[in-house]
Image 1 (cartoon, protein in one colour):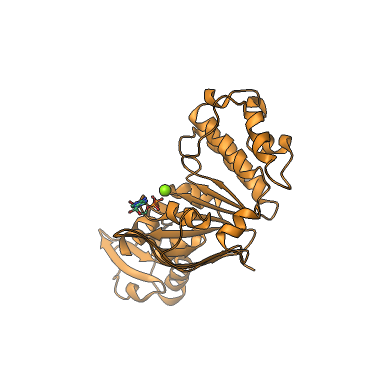
Image 2 (cartoon, helix red, strand yellow):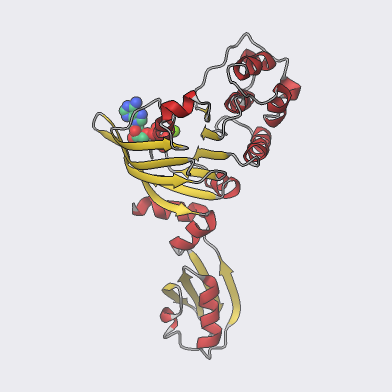
Length: 294
Ligand SMILES: Nc1ncnc2c1ncn2[C@@H]1O[C@H](COP(=O)(O)OP(=O)(O)O)[C@@H](O)[C@H]1O
Ligand SMILES: [Mg+2]
C-alpha cells in the first residue's frame, strides 16, 4: 500500500487555485522532495495531508486512511513553517511533554540525539536561535515515532552548521524504513537529500523522477569538441541531439543523453574529433526550464 496518495486533488482559496488536479503516489520508505518556486502549492499540499485544509475536490489517503484518521493514529509527524514553541520550557521538557502525548513515542534521548539537541537539552525554548528552534520543531515532529514525516521548508532560518546536522538526523530517521516528504525551493537540497523529486509549479506536477532523471529530461547537457575545417553536417541527427552550434571550428551539441551522442559520434561518423568535453545540466537549469514550460 502507498504511504501517500493524492487522487485528482484541487484546492481553491476563493479565486486562487493553489493545487490543480494533483495526482501522485508515494511508496513507503521513500524520501521525496516536493520542489517548487514560492507559491507553487507546496505548503497547501502538506496542509491538505495533515487535514488542516480540506480539498475542494479529490481525495487524499495516507496508508489507506483519511488525513484526519491518519493524524489520530499518529501516522504523521510534521514540521511546519511557523510552529510556535512554549518559551518557558526547556528543550528537554518540551520534547518530553510532546512525546508523552503519543502511545508509542521514541525515547527522549534518541529524539534529542536525532535532532542534535543533546547539548541544548537544558536551554529554554525562548532563548534558542532560529536554527536551533527549527531543530526543536524537527524533534517534536519525530517525537511520536510517526511512519511519515512531513517537513515544510525545514532548513529555512538554519545556518550551514544546523543544516548539516538537520539532514544527518533526517537521514537517520528515514533509514528505519520511514517515509519523508519535504518541501523545498532549494534545488541542491532536493538533489542531495531525496531519492525522488516531484517538481510542482502552479499546483501541478511539472516533473517527477530522480534528480538525475529530471536533469536528463530537460536536455540541458552538452557535448563539445573541436572539428577544425571538417564539415559539421549531419551532427543534428546523432542520438539525443536537439540542437547544434558551430563557432570557430568548435561544435556544441545540446543533448538529452551524452552517452548516446558520444557513442554515435565515434561509431556513426568518420570525423576526427579533438578536445571532447561533456557537461551535465545542473538541477538549477533543469528546474527553471521545467517551471517555465508548465
Ligand atoms: N490562505 C490563503 N488564502 C489565499 N491564497 C492563499 C492562501 N494560502 C496560500 N495561498 C496562495 O496559494 C498559492 C500556493 O501557496 P502555497 O501552498 O503557500 O505555496 P508554496 O508553499 O509552494 O510557496 C499561492 O498563490 C498563494 O498565494
Ligand atoms: Mg510554503
